[in-house]
Length: 488
Image 1 (cartoon, helix red, strand yellow):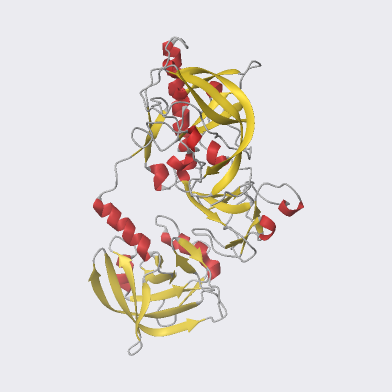
Image 2: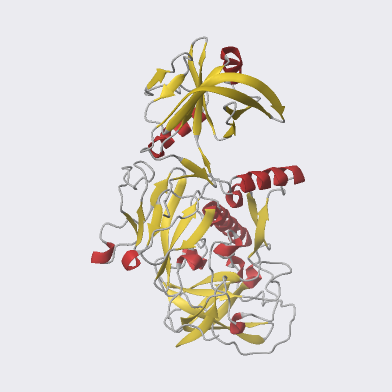
């Protein structure tokens, strides 16, 4: 396959976790679009343990180790930030003008003119950086001209942060979730012990050229390098191609530790050379790429020429995560994920308690029988609404409309006044609340209670019902609210 003739790679997949990564505190420039770091290297192919020249760099050992520890702590902090690389849960490419859903996000997304645009979402679904609620159409991107006018670099969807991304002009939506397992389960970043011997003198040979590279998702492209870092390990000359950006040289490289003692490849930021072309490579500051924290990144891989035959026993090694979930936890999560694939309506079951109306959000509702007319709903054994349901013996199941997702969230909480600001009327001969502006409701008396694991199933004999055919229903699917799109 011939690589596409493109001269840029998305910079944030190189620099997202590079905060504090550079020697001398100089990280790569996250705003740059040029990230090629590769060129064919020259030198022997022998795979040998390397012992650097310890006389080449002799700092105060205590200061050196303290500064390295501070850098490492900063790296962990950046990786585990609420919008850090460990929080990335989705990169979804969006092309064309046909709106389509993005998993976990409200509304529909398209890219007219190459600009990410969200439509068909409810007020309050998205929040702008100013704190204001976004209105449709919502444009996402870095404003660069008339086509991007009014675009935002970031919006919030509840707890999620949504940002734009682009590769070779193809836009994508990126979603960061602070509750992502990749973030909450990240314990530390394992690293080799810091050693001043791994600070190696180097010269930078400026030799700009374009080279083919492959990205983590298999995409092939062309990137630009600025030149080669030339250095020696154990008397053997090596070269690593790099790109000058933001006052530093960015490098992606591999070595003999990859896949055995360290991640498959690593990044490195080297101070820009002085007037004579001299600099120093601190391999202790070799750091993991963003894709080590989330597989939703599309990091550039090192070209064959940037894979050193030597063992570089310095820098970060791999991500250490908390203990793996138990088999039961894995089974439970899997069950929830699969059940979430089945779309359902959303209801609020209401009744009258001793001190006033009682209600709770319920998805587990369905029609059971026409003759006699029976429906069912389930409720957790631990629900605080259970006693009122049993005592009353009468309920109304309210079918929420697309405009009532706020009620779904409101009645799913406990310990708050669920009824504040809620308009309702009592059902005739039942007394349970019928919520205003629902798409339909059924009322009846409880026929029987059935044991069902950690829930109870109630059969209800329907004695009154109503529907509003012009009101669109609220739908829940894969952890997000949806609206129907009619195909015929």
